[in-house]
Image 1 (tube, helix red, strand yellow):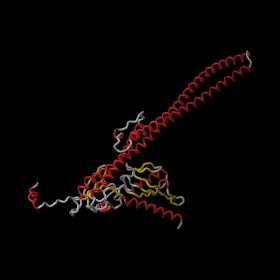
Image 2 (cartoon, helix red, strand yellow; image 1 turned 120 degrees about the horizontal axis):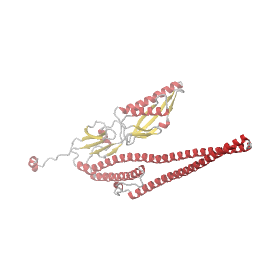
Image 3 (cartoon, rainbow, N blue to C red; image 1 turned 120 degrees about the vertical axis):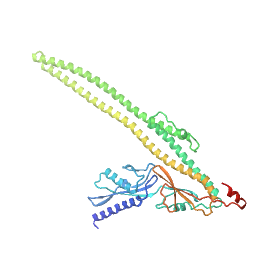
Image 4 (tube, rainbow, N blue to C red; image 1 turned 90 degrees about the horizontal axis):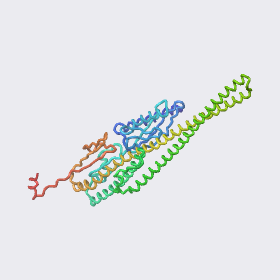
Length: 428
């Protein structure tokens, strides 16, 4: 096969792969936080007929809590809420604009790991599980061990699960407290404050974190960064003061030379008149002219030195501003990362709290009611547009990443004893 034909075929295969990647999930699946994506970017070199892979844009990336992908050279790209096909088109356009390609490259986006789903209620192992494409409610229940069955030691198992979840919750709370302490330090840096004000919830010791030590370390880091910036700005300020003094001295010298030049020019005028009248010799006129030239040359040197000093002064002022802006931008970037981590932690804390309630309250209450042949009730909670909506579903309905599936079994109504039949019938 000729090289051009082979390259065209390879380009077609790459474009088809990108199209399949976009259409396989585009119909039903929307990207969201915690999705792990594999990205490949190619383009066809028309001059050589060869397909070129842009390795700088390839790799595996995770969608952050804000729904963005942070990509090399391209920066943040919005992925949340769109399909893999939408993201592939956006990446191709961004790469074309960034690199300056004449033709739109081929971008292939594939989900290699979906964000998890959660299942609670009357299942054997409630918790967080990795999502699989095409997952149904019944399959989700099977992954969680199936419907809960009465067995010996079940209550002990619930207690053990609750203890495990509580341990995880304490770890999450400790991580959150550490992020709050760091967030307070970054806020003080951004505001250029002299001290850090830590919130009350960051000072508590209930999470198991050594809050006093964490606060002390963040305070030391704040003081060190502030002192370093202050020292650098102070050094530039001293240099600016020296240059200002140098400019003042050069201005004084320039003024003195200006007066001397005026005097020597008057003398030159007098000597020229005397030479014209024959009262003075020409060598004396020549000597005075040389003195005028020397003074003027010195004045030019002073003016050149003054221009250089002004340039250095402008450069120092620019460096001082750039230094402070750089430190502020670094703090803003780190603060954004902390906010994203706090948002992700908050979701995990809410999930752990729900699982603890399930293990300590709901599951022990429902386990004694199992085994009577009642049909389970399936409900699904899905977050869309910042709002969580719960609806009743069937076993064959599909589950999306991030969904919470709850399975409940209606309680059995025990048949009243013969002696109590009349009382049961008369009770409201």
